[in-house]
Amino acid sequence: QQQQQQQQQQQQQQQAPRAHPAGAMSQFFQRIAQYLANELVTKRLANSQTFMSAAHKTHQNVQRSQELLKTGKGQAVEQSKSAFSFLGDVRRELAKELTGKGKP
Image 1 (tube, rainbow, N blue to C red):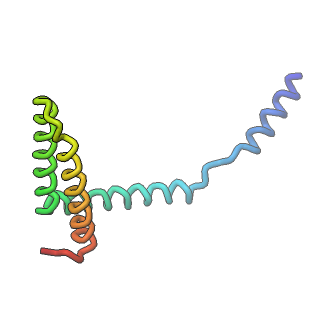
Image 2: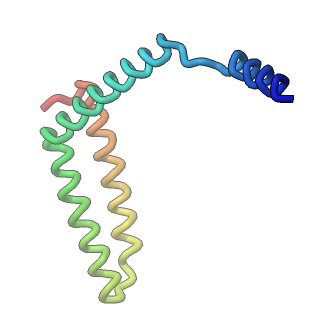
Protein backbone atom coordinates (compact mmCIF):
# COMPACT_ATOMS: atom_id res chain seq x y z
CA GLN A 1 0.00 0.00 0.00
CA GLN A 2 2.77 2.40 0.83
CA GLN A 3 4.35 1.75 -2.53
CA GLN A 4 1.03 2.48 -4.27
CA GLN A 5 0.62 5.69 -2.31
CA GLN A 6 4.14 6.77 -3.24
CA GLN A 7 3.44 6.06 -6.90
CA GLN A 8 0.22 8.08 -6.75
CA GLN A 9 2.02 10.99 -5.12
CA GLN A 10 4.72 10.88 -7.79
CA GLN A 11 2.09 10.88 -10.54
CA GLN A 12 0.29 13.81 -8.95
CA GLN A 13 3.54 15.76 -8.69
CA GLN A 14 4.35 15.07 -12.32
CA GLN A 15 0.87 16.16 -13.42
CA ALA A 16 0.80 19.33 -11.29
CA PRO A 17 1.20 22.46 -13.41
CA ARG A 18 4.42 24.32 -12.79
CA ALA A 19 4.83 28.06 -12.92
CA HIS A 20 6.52 29.10 -16.11
CA PRO A 21 9.39 31.55 -15.56
CA ALA A 22 8.28 33.64 -18.54
CA GLY A 23 4.80 33.98 -16.99
CA ALA A 24 6.26 35.23 -13.73
CA MET A 25 8.44 37.71 -15.62
CA SER A 26 5.43 38.88 -17.60
CA GLN A 27 3.50 39.52 -14.38
CA PHE A 28 6.47 41.43 -13.02
CA PHE A 29 6.61 43.74 -16.05
CA GLN A 30 2.83 44.10 -15.99
CA ARG A 31 3.00 45.29 -12.37
CA ILE A 32 5.74 47.77 -13.21
CA ALA A 33 3.71 49.16 -16.14
CA GLN A 34 0.61 49.39 -13.96
CA TYR A 35 2.55 51.24 -11.25
CA LEU A 36 4.04 53.71 -13.72
CA ALA A 37 0.67 54.36 -15.35
CA ASN A 38 -0.89 54.90 -11.92
CA GLU A 39 1.86 57.37 -11.00
CA LEU A 40 1.43 59.26 -14.27
CA VAL A 41 -2.34 59.56 -13.91
CA THR A 42 -2.08 60.53 -10.24
CA LYS A 43 0.48 63.26 -10.94
CA ARG A 44 -1.49 64.64 -13.88
CA LEU A 45 -4.68 64.75 -11.82
CA ALA A 46 -2.88 66.34 -8.87
CA ASN A 47 -1.62 69.12 -11.14
CA SER A 48 -4.92 69.54 -12.98
CA GLN A 49 -6.83 72.73 -12.24
CA THR A 50 -9.97 71.07 -13.60
CA PHE A 51 -9.64 68.20 -11.14
CA MET A 52 -8.98 70.53 -8.21
CA SER A 53 -11.97 72.65 -9.15
CA ALA A 54 -14.13 69.53 -9.47
CA ALA A 55 -13.02 68.27 -6.06
CA HIS A 56 -13.78 71.63 -4.45
CA LYS A 57 -17.20 71.97 -6.08
CA THR A 58 -18.05 68.36 -5.27
CA HIS A 59 -17.16 69.00 -1.65
CA GLN A 60 -19.34 72.11 -1.63
CA ASN A 61 -22.27 70.18 -3.18
CA VAL A 62 -21.95 67.41 -0.61
CA GLN A 63 -21.84 69.95 2.22
CA ARG A 64 -24.93 71.73 0.86
CA SER A 65 -26.80 68.45 0.45
CA GLN A 66 -25.98 67.48 4.02
CA GLU A 67 -27.18 70.86 5.26
CA LEU A 68 -30.44 70.47 3.35
CA LEU A 69 -31.00 67.00 4.77
CA LYS A 70 -30.35 68.26 8.29
CA THR A 71 -32.74 71.17 7.95
CA GLY A 72 -35.39 68.97 6.36
CA LYS A 73 -35.81 70.92 3.14
CA GLY A 74 -36.95 68.90 0.14
CA GLN A 75 -34.44 70.44 -2.22
CA ALA A 76 -31.84 67.70 -1.74
CA VAL A 77 -33.05 65.96 -4.88
CA GLU A 78 -32.50 69.12 -6.90
CA GLN A 79 -29.01 69.48 -5.48
CA SER A 80 -28.11 65.88 -6.26
CA LYS A 81 -29.31 66.28 -9.86
CA SER A 82 -27.17 69.37 -10.32
CA ALA A 83 -24.22 67.59 -8.71
CA PHE A 84 -24.54 64.62 -11.07
CA SER A 85 -24.80 66.97 -14.02
CA PHE A 86 -21.70 68.80 -12.84
CA LEU A 87 -19.78 65.55 -12.36
CA GLY A 88 -20.65 64.53 -15.92
CA ASP A 89 -19.22 67.82 -17.18
CA VAL A 90 -16.09 67.33 -15.09
CA ARG A 91 -15.64 63.80 -16.40
CA ARG A 92 -15.76 65.05 -19.97
CA GLU A 93 -13.29 67.85 -19.24
CA LEU A 94 -10.87 65.48 -17.49
CA ALA A 95 -11.07 63.06 -20.40
CA LYS A 96 -10.14 65.89 -22.76
CA GLU A 97 -7.28 66.93 -20.50
CA LEU A 98 -5.90 63.41 -20.06
CA THR A 99 -5.97 62.75 -23.78
CA GLY A 100 -4.22 66.05 -24.40
CA LYS A 101 -7.05 67.56 -26.45
CA GLY A 102 -8.04 70.22 -23.96
CA LYS A 103 -4.74 71.62 -22.73
CA PRO A 104 -5.19 75.06 -21.15
